[in-house]
Image 1 (cartoon, rainbow, N blue to C red):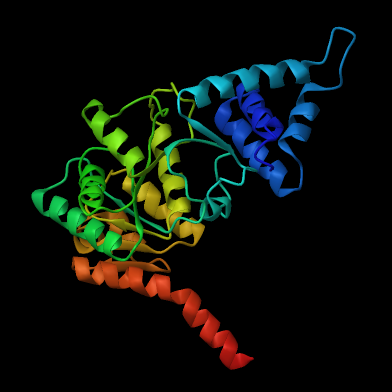
Image 2: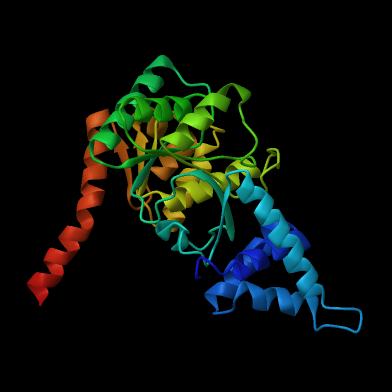
Length: 301
């Protein structure tokens, strides 16, 4: 999409407003995979103009006004066809049709997700911090969810190491959850970016955090799970990463201390690490895969 042409973005906003956003978003993604534009989808939904006027024009005008208001508040509005849409996320089947962002959006960002329990142990905090430092030291972005516990430790350590960090949140981008992370939210945007796939003023509910976990997986080259309980939401991210074909690293306490961790450890490209160094070694090997493939193709050729 040409950046000056806002029609597609307005059509995405209008389509999501017309139906239940999650369902409408899936329909939009499927339609674009089949070569349709968001404008075509909206026109099909609304039908042809009538003597009373064209509902398409009304919907697009309303959407443009919303977009103007969001952008005036410093919020970037990024639709699926936008050149700013993250490349790696674009490759997964359940990508969101619309993203809202604050900060610096890098389309080809190389990020490693560091996630885990909100109720984390002191050892878990230390592991998250050391992992974040190691990721930053490799010139990569630390990706997490701005939640309490592991997420907070990872974001803060990345910032303290003068690195880039990106957050995917389970609320609208104008909301702050937990409330005590309001200032961290701002710092993450200043040192990277904060993304949300929900309307800017939308509060969290039981569905929003699992959805953002899937989006975080799609954005990242790999996911490291530091510490988690049997019912931890991070197990959703692990499962999504496997579905997305992205490597997962389970710290040993997760792989041996939970039923889902033991099951997950048997999946393809899921690795168990007993130490921070082992986890970072997996990330190094993941980053080396394109070169290994290139060498293999060269040898065949």
